[in-house]
Amino acid sequence: MLENKWVRYILKGVAVFLAVVILIMAVNVFTQNVIAHIDDPFTPQYDRVTLTEQTDYETIFLQTGLGKVAAEKLINEGKFSEILEAQDLFFSNDEIECLPLIKWFTREERLENELIPLYDLQPGDILVTLSTHTWGWRHGHCAIVIDEYTTVESISMGVNSSKGYMRLWQDYSNFAVLRVKDKTLEERKEVANFTLKKLLDKPYSLLSGFGFNKAPDVNSKGFSLHCSYLAWYAWNAFGVDLDSDKGRLATSYDILHSDKVEIVQLYGMDPNEFI
Image (cartoon, rainbow, N blue to C red; front, side):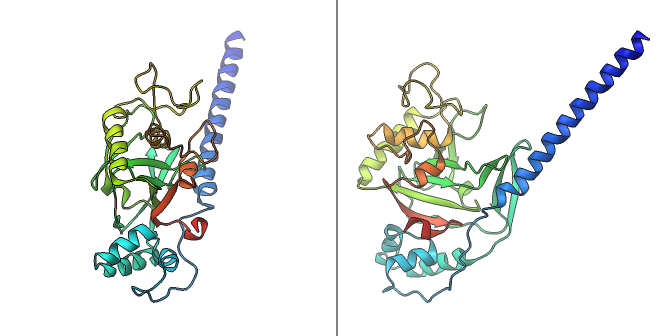
């Protein structure tokens, strides 16, 4: 009799455990496939227009995602054809794959067929994508540009910050290239060199910046990073606070909407939000 009682308890426990697992999986499927895709990557719904070298920069931005600094550089270098190519890509509607990044609860969206050229990358620029999502939250991802081929990034739990490669940014379903305003190329290089020398091989933590000091010494015990905190910390070390809401968590969204940055290039994001 006692044995039967314990068997019933065990079976009930197993049933409850399986029910919880099934519920978690169902919630994950719903958030990843429905909630996360309420705001899918942007494709222009407005009319495409014919661009010329005399077109104003705001129109070029709306038609190509290229900010003034990138468009002006291409025009001055006699590369207007690249602006027209950027327009083709900006209005294209490539298929998107939503791929697992960390097991089954974090995913990221990648273009199936396109590699988007990155224009006018400079050291110290910041790359932001909102294509990465966990349980429906589009927390995105950030990186600091070291040179035209290399980034420094803090990718995920259990992985120390490391060098990344620009190729991996070219097929995100959306991204922005940001440049801190009113800084010379030499100043931006200083930030890139600081990132390369001081912020490599640091442990990952979602709680970075939540201590008594939001920006502890890089050599202090327990110092850690996550992707957007890395970008924030690098520039904050040079007196530029890119956290637009001034909270304890410096997110990709906070940096993207900081009034201290200008857009070099957008893809898969609505330029109207930045005018």
